[in-house]
Image (cartoon, rainbow, N blue to C red):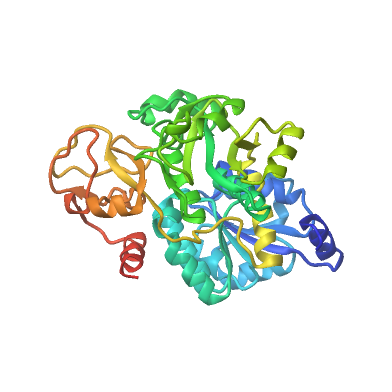
Length: 428
């Protein structure tokens, strides 16, 4: 079977290329556009963002001449531009999902409700969808995957995102017949449950990033959501609510991820977790019950057993997304998807005392953070998934800092797509 690079090169030799539609021209989207412009057999032919100048700048920085950028929200004008090998800058995301020329759509908005809308529209338009929106995926991904499967298209997370990178290690080890004990990622910064956009403002300005995005990293929500996606894809689960968050280096991992009664720190096996000290890498802890395999692993300097670590020291975020686009297009396969349905749930926890009648402000904001539980634990608590939090959700009772917010604690003042899809998913 040809590698993706050869498939793309062969496609370009025929005078064709994969036509990608992108929603979101922020940091992730900009990087992806530039990366794809360096590749064979692929192009981002249309990008939508409410700030149209972000789209134009993204294309220009990728080396596309201004004369070849068509700004329009008109379907026929967009079609004409794409068929003339130009690119389209638009404000309307529905133009991206409905444009007949587009083969694969990428959601890089990072907003759960918008991501759910984009994925739903894309699948209904019989196109593959790549999600750079793990928050939407862990909330309604199982439903979206079922819809995509029945429509004959691919619903997938992205290569380069940590869940996608972890899934590569899982698939490698699983194919070889190893027992997979644990899956995890490094955390880039110390856990600060009280982080908010004020805390991260200066760092965000230096990095050219969103303060809310950085706050979601620091308060742990992003880590919880990412490992939630891995749990849903593999059938694994957090070893305890919120995971352990061990400290250690790569060499320490095989000894940490052993049951407590055997000298390690786990309550059980097949767990997802995170470790401070191994960022930006991801890892899989593996084992074998075969004497010859263990002898070979020791000979190969993989450790003394009984556990061994597979470690990937990098993940290139949206720069790797094109690999998922190509895999969906050529092979009709996802990089990572919720094959096991809802195994974990990232629930909503109050970041501070919140009064009755106050509105919640979303992921990476001032009011809440996410905490990963097993799905059945979350259901028993009637806990609200953090992916459902937005500015239209109002508290019907006061909650204390550190308290899990339940469905019965809130009311939705304006209906949203992700709430509708989640209600439909919960009925199945």
